[in-house]
Image (tube, rainbow, N blue to C red):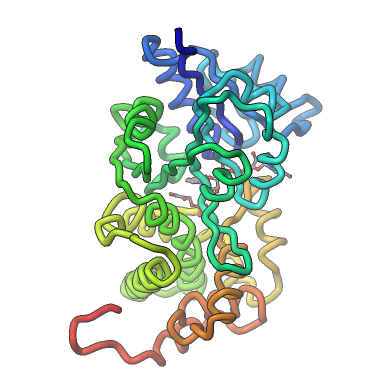
Length: 357
Ligand SMILES: NC(=O)C1=CN([C@@H]2O[C@H](COP(=O)(O)OP(=O)(O)OC[C@H]3O[C@@H](n4cnc5c(N)ncnc54)[C@H](O)[C@@H]3O)[C@@H](O)[C@H]2O)C=CC1
Ligand SMILES: O=C(CO)COP(=O)(O)O
């Protein structure tokens, strides 16, 4: 008899813990489909004198990253990733993208033969060849297929069970159908798109645009400016996706992973919040200072992505085609004044033919 589907969650931050509420609930509810126990890998740390894994396994709450929300009792915290992944065939990767290679290195040789992954990670990697999606990093390092799930998903709102949507980007339709059962609830609605690259790159790039939106907020600007920044950012996201990746579908940008995630992050995300603080500090604080001061251990993904994206578009002589991405990088890392964002955007001639290419 085939082994039962078993879910492991690799990562336990703000989104990882929220997803543990959802996947834990669904594993218990769909007992015909899933083993009830869901293990979650927790990067061990001491919180109020106790190990975080011990707190989660006794209080059923991640008091540091998702305080005030109970996790289902069938969610079991493990300090070692191999222990969390043992016996699981559905591996949910949900940790800051800078840590994914180190995690995968520990998992090599410890996975079930029929294991497959889904990445909820919003970031991107680069090598000499160009853009490397995080789902590709996972697929190559572990030798497992990897889908993605992205969307307009500010974790705290989903933990409140407010209605929202997400998009699964997949290659294997059977995996996607099973993943829908892992994630879907009455308040968290799942769509699919056979476009892993398109879904994933939207999730990574919108974080750069969110920094620009936060700069606008920090300068005290209003809704029209932010809407323009969101639109210009979306154009650059589409341009970047089409330039660097193959077969990205136009329809993907209209899914939750596209325009909806861009909007929610530009209004309610951590990248936006930290960029606002950065702009108000007028050069007195770095993003590293602000991440530590504002996020209590949570991590920014947009600044790293802005740096990496800038390196590749500079290498390829494309800075003029990506003025918003370039400007965000120069403001965040090169000491350019925040107001230069709008000067830079104002220098580009807009098309009179309705074209956005
Ligand atoms: N929080 C949100 O609203 C959403 C987050 N995401 C994405 O999900 C991914 C994970 O984010 P969150 O769960 O929010 O995490 P988080 O930013 O809330 O927490 C950081 C996590 O990193 C862990 N960590 C710290 N140092 C580490 C190390 N050296 N090695 C491994 N782990 C370490 C911490 O223990 C913690 O679990 C990110 O790519 C993010 O963009 C996606 C949708 C929504
Ligand atoms: O991805 C997110 C919402 O979908 C969260 O964005 P932040 O990482 O900026 O909070």
